[in-house]
Image 1 (cartoon, rainbow, N blue to C red):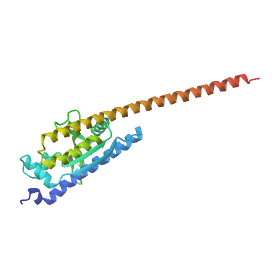
Image 2 (image 1 turned 90 degrees about the vertical axis):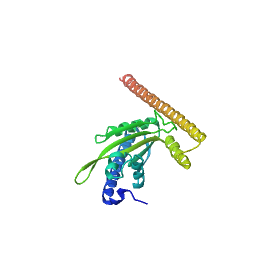
Image 3 (image 1 turned 135 degrees about the vertical axis):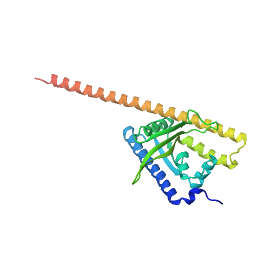
Image 4 (image 1 turned 90 degrees about the horizontal axis):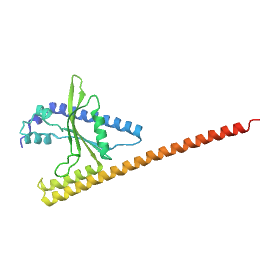
Amino acid sequence: MELPMIYYEEDLWSKTLLIYDSALKEINTKLEILNNEFKLNHQYNPIEHITSRLKTPESISKKLKHKGLQVTIENVLKCINDVAGIRIICSFTSDIYNIAALISRQSDVEVLKVKDYICNPKPNGYMSYHMIITIPIFLSNRVVNTKVEIQIRTIAMDFWASLEHKMYYKFDGNSPEHIRRELKECADIVSFLDKKMLSINEEIQTYKEDQEIYEEDIVEEVYEETIYSYNYIEINEKP
């Protein structure tokens, strides 16, 4: 088997891989800080968990060849957007857009491309929010703006996408029509579930806010009655 060109450039490939790995660490740190701050300010944790991965040289080589490109480090850096990938799993769809906005507002992050497969699901039912961003990696002698693909999903979306991927590739990408139809029906159920859970959560939040207002009113009334009673006693007990 003939090895792709990048296998003969081991040192250059190792340095390239280091840059992408550093980009993943940078983004992971940013997300951890944002999540902790959100939890501190709102007593709520919007991120369930985060996973990250680097494409293997074999996978990158295959993708470049599929694009009709020569397998070189230059083409990897220029033409492949998802060498480094991060997947963020959220509780609710509203969290997805909140997290995306927080990432976009980072001063050293540049958003290159966004694909909203939640508002516009793929024909097979796939839903997720995709961002291609760049982040600067500071090396000893230069700064490299490095691309990272970020996928943001709910727990339900991730459940469907993971199982659909496993089942679909059992057919080498050519699953029967009725299987594709049933998977699409499952995606529709997942979408309904997400909307229902978000609606319930919003109702709970409204109830909680109303309850807090009610309790504040009660405390204020008790305070006012106490002050009134104190003043009444003080006036009537004067000689």
